[in-house]
Length: 223
Image (cartoon, rainbow, N blue to C red; front, side, top):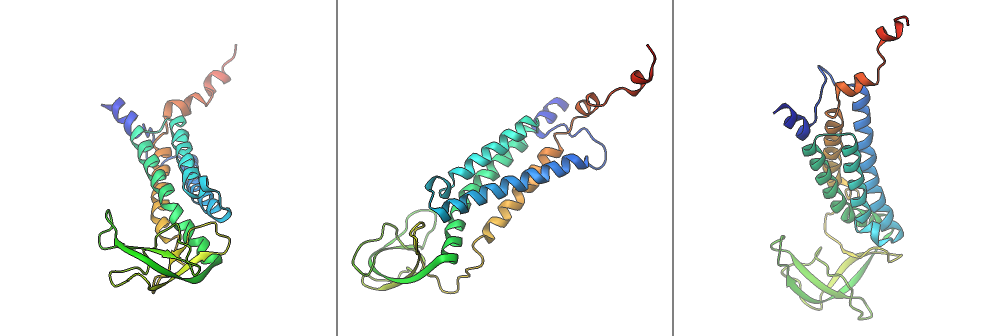
């Protein structure tokens, strides 16, 4: 049972407070991984790199973090938890990145609704509007912000669009704050950093620490 517990949750062979070096290493690893996952996604959206803007770069970073914990011989359950949190963060980051880009260099314009339909799926009660610009060219994306049950074809909707065309436009929602696009990521980032910290700290093995320290008695003994 002790071996199974060590394999699943990590050995944590220390008494009292964890070693400060491992605590600092786990904190740095979690912060760097979370920062890279969010940063590459924002950079991909800002510069129009699809592979990064869609979260694929963040998934690679999450896999690299899991590999690092595997090299550290952390508990398998904690590695799985950290990997899952990294994937969730990588999948949440694209929407926040698009919102941040639109907040920085977006412009508000008007589009015409061509059709309205209720969304079928995870968000009941949401409506999707197919829209066209002032020249009658249909937009490739459908708008749900500002689109409701009372919306009819021919109505005008306000959308915010990227002046460089690198991210899709969004509907303008009344009362929406432009300063809180990354707010939803704070919880994911904090949880990922905390899980990484625990995984690294619990990977501590007393036998490995002892093997790195020379036997003073043996060194002091004569030939």
